[in-house]
Image (cartoon, rainbow, N blue to C red; front, top):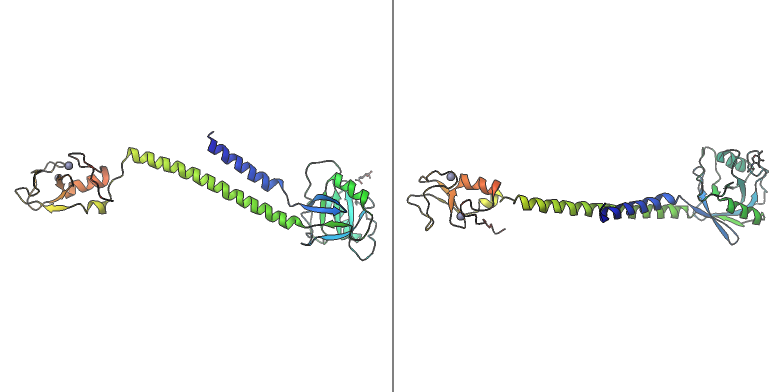
Length: 277
Ligand SMILES: *[C@@H]1O[C@H](CO)[C@@H](O)[C@H](O)[C@H]1NC(C)=O
Ligand SMILES: [Zn+2]
Ligand SMILES: [Zn+2]
């Protein structure tokens, strides 16, 4: 594998890792502690300013049965729910039914990545986010149920934007690398081709080479020939001849196809017919 192709693959890998390994993530904050969360793929998203409210652990912890109602304190109330035993959607619906304004579901195992909860969005009007087991334990430990203590921010639009921009930039980089690679290769092919098959002279250029009407005896000075070296026919009075810069002359019908299809030089002396272009 050549280094260029290796670089290309590396770039592609980096770009896809960047785009794929950063799902729309946002942050949950409680006091000084901040945790990464993954917004659910169903239900509303947290508004752009983020939301803050009190936080309590769900009762029962897995929210697989009706959850004890949220306190009607006026401020927003969030509920922390453990993963497992029933669907994410069921947990979020139970939280909503109990009057909570957002649901935080924490993992029940230590895992490196956060899960993007899926479910049917029908009738769900509270946002839900997924946090790690460690985040869940810390949140549970320090939550006091005080107004505004816990904030769910919505950097996810930003993050989504960043991912989009990064993907786009990577794409542009990849495309330009591929393009320059292909371009360089095509140029090489082209140059290669040029070496093997010299380009012919364009018809309109050939037609600009001086021509004359043959009149016996021959009229073009020193190199005066009586016959065309291409078709070997003697010239007749009135034949149109093309006079090449080397002073060799040929029938127009004979030399023009030669120059436009076969070679760029005089068939007799091999001198290049420089056209000045
Ligand atoms: C799941 O259900 C079992 C049995 O009811 C219970 O012991 C366990 O605590 C539940 N899991 C969670 C995370 O609440
Ligand atoms: Zn001829
Ligand atoms: Zn010649």
